[in-house]
Amino acid sequence: MIKETKVINHQEMEILLNNVEKPTFVHLVTNTKVRMNKKGNPYHDQVRKELRSNFYIGCEFIKRVRKTYENEGIEETFEVEGLKGK
Image (tube, rainbow, N blue to C red; front, side, top):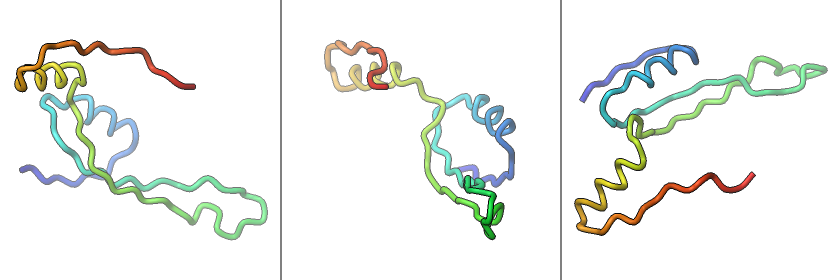
């Protein structure tokens, strides 16, 4: 297992995640500014939000579903539909 800690900006994160060759799990800790009113707010630009979460990256959903069907011996009837909702 490779454990590596990097402090990067948004553009560097895009480049890093787009270069993933094999599907893998990543643990991301993001630290962002909270949007708030400037006028009369003594805490403006002092509050930050931290999110810690695990993600599975580098996997194509259709290939994963087809491989699962193949492994389980199920006839492939899966078709991707368009997005629903707003």
